[in-house]
Each structure stands twice: as C-alpha cells, then as structure tokens.
Image 1 (spheres, rainbow, N blue to C red):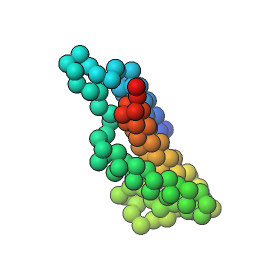
Image 2: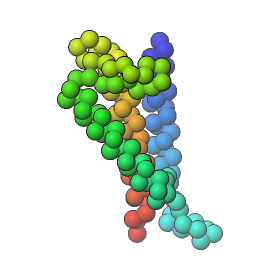
Image 3: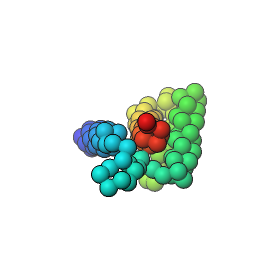
Image 4: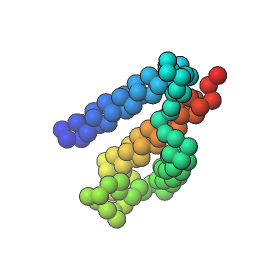
Length: 118
C-alpha cells in the first residue's frame, strides 16, 4: 500500500510540474510591465541541471546494461540491487532514476524553449 501511495504522489508531482511548465510556455515573451518571462532555471541553474541530468542518464543506462543499480536514497546507502536477486527494489530505483531524469530534462526543455522563442 505504501508503494502505491508513493507512486501516486510521484505521478501527481509530475503532473503539477508539467502544468507549471505549460503555464510558463503559454505566457507571452514580455508581460504587461515590460519584464521578460523567466524560465524555470537561470543560466547557472541550467548548467547544473544539465550536468545532473547527464549523470542520471549515465547511471540509468549503466544500470540497464549491468543489471544492477545502487540504492537511491539515504536509508539504504551503499546497497546495490541486482535484477536477478532484488527485482522489485531494482525496478523501484530504476523508476526513481527515470523520473528524476524526466523531470530535470523537462525543466531544461521549458527553459530553453522560453529563451529561444520568437
């Protein structure tokens, strides 16, 4: 039951982030005060977010190829879940990695779309 609530909350959080990004994309380039519409992250934040997203992509692909994923979180530090021995924990951590990667990639997409619109 706890896992179902966890996944439901992750989906709700993803939907909220998606709606926030879409609201930013619907805004005009300049508001009524003459100020520019800002993206989700600034220039330094974009570099940091892109770096973290690249690391998560590497970790995700590495886990797919090797069949083992290190634990994502504080409670299970230094544990490695393998697909053969711990399939449920493996896929739960893969889902978390994919979800984080998707969220950060969407933030980068929205920011770049706002910056380069005409």
